[in-house]
Amino acid sequence: MKEKIKPSVQKSQQSQEKAPWLSSLAVKDLVSPITISRVRMVQLGIIFLLFTTAAYYAWDNFLRQPSGIELMNEMVEAAGGMDAWNNIREGKFTRTRYLYEQNGDQISEIAQTFYFRKENGNVQLKVKSQTKDGDIVQISKDDQGYWATRANMPADPRLTSGDLGMMCDSKFCNPDCAASMAFYRFSMPFKLTDPGVRPDNGSVSDLVLFDPIKEFFGVELQPLVLDVGYKPTVGKDRWKFYVHPENKLIYKMEYFNKSDWGEYRPEEIFWTDHQTVDGITFSHEWRRYWSNGKIMEKYVFSEVDFSSPLGADFFNRPDGHQLLSVK
Image (tube, rainbow, N blue to C red; front, side, top):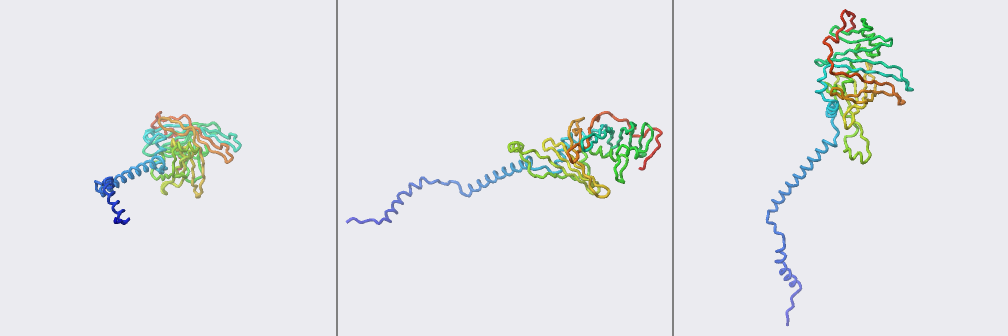
């Protein structure tokens, strides 16, 4: 009589028969698992480092908005650079001012030629213009004080400047006040590098999209905004410059002048017709508008000359001129 083998014993024997064959097909880890783990960790670390570096580079160079100082430097470079500006020591430009009524009718037109000399951080100015009566006037300052001529005769600098509409209502206003402000604005953005200036990026968004992405989605380029203030010991006014995101040139300026009584008097001026003269790129036409959209005021720059030298005594009062103004 045959002895029956129990099923459990049969299964055990079958498993023992298959075990050697399956073992020969198993992957044999001939390297220490710990070593492999460390190599993989190093590889993952390198990949992570490369990814992080690439992401930061993309953010810093393409996506991030520039800081206030970075934007200011880009504006200076776009306008020609500080070296080009510093190489200009003297020159002249004519600024023609047009005034309009709210219906668009022109009220007046006056041309003023500004002569300047930059020396040791100071600027000497002379303004030459014409009164409503047709008299040629000049206003300047030398080491004795302010002086002016009208029809080649000595004139009071304050009255002459006032007749030209170049005196403000501040008690600190001098005959060259408006001329100094005109040259200060003309010198933008180079004057933003002066000590005491506090530039800040006032743009709404902190993210800059790639231009192809903007074009694909039909997103319009938004201007960058440079918000400028001053240290309390330097100034109290505030400026805003709206800058093209690609060429970094100024296309609009907002000026918040703080009066003697503490109130701000805002101005909104649009800059167009950018041209390059002697390595300096600047707007040759400024405009202000009424609330109805009609033009209110326009300045046109012409006869710009930075290469013709002015005489050593160009800013001195004429011989025999004895009339002195206060300060």
